[in-house]
Image (cartoon, rainbow, N blue to C red; front, side, top):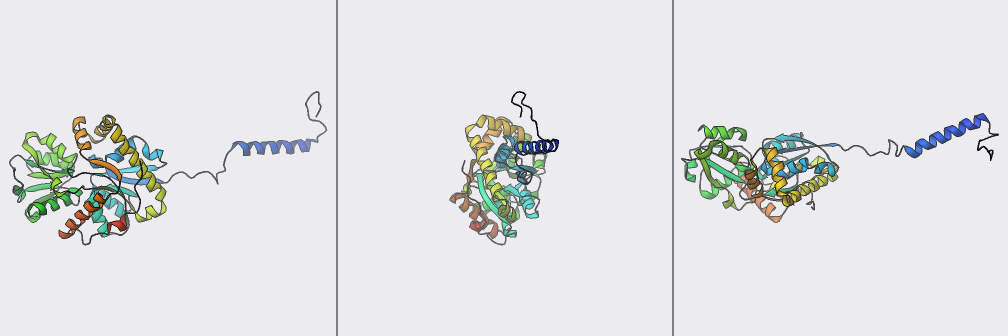
Length: 331
């Protein structure tokens, strides 16, 4: 190099070309980062099924607040009208993960060994309510009455267990299998004498039918917490366990938000579910929320399983511990 001009000299043109090529390749290597072979693969879509109602609120909050994405999950949500449909989605393979109540899970587990229980995320003894027309003032009047209910649901299992406790004969009750969306009009027009469901279905009936109806009872006398459950297929759990744990962490974040930010929680949920905010607040906070699986959850689930078995709704009682596969996520 000429010290006065800084220009390379005495280097053949052929060598200069090689040097230029080397510098260019070096620049590419230094600036391009990891090669495609070493780049992180994009997350696989996780098919998640739940209902757009009170019992599934941690999922609604987790989606609205972006907690699934924060945990590195790419979630595709499919909404259904009840837990029994979520359970069916899991059994047919159209869902990787699904949320449901106790009875739908037990029905699914009694039919197949391919479902796994990840955790409970909430529950409450007053989850289910019976709304009756104003002329029905005693529970004995339900015998012979037309009761709208979603067959196979958690409410259905609770109703049958409650009948046993209070001495009603389920065979004398005319259960009408009906979508909860159709119950308000059916009650208003007198096509049903009563309905049973979890929120927002009872509140929707009360809002539509007004003083034509009243709350006849809830099922708190059963001393059952009616745990709300998140379940996955055995294959998904085996192959994607890290994602299952990430899902539980996202739900734990949602529960913490619900505890710490009740006003904002109510606004988000009322907009999603369609309840007026005062009603939404009452429905949300009459339930207990928490990601895990307690002894009370186990005992309540076993209680429901025994009731379903005695009524011939399942042919065996699943060994709950054998289905519980993932420990609770810590908030």
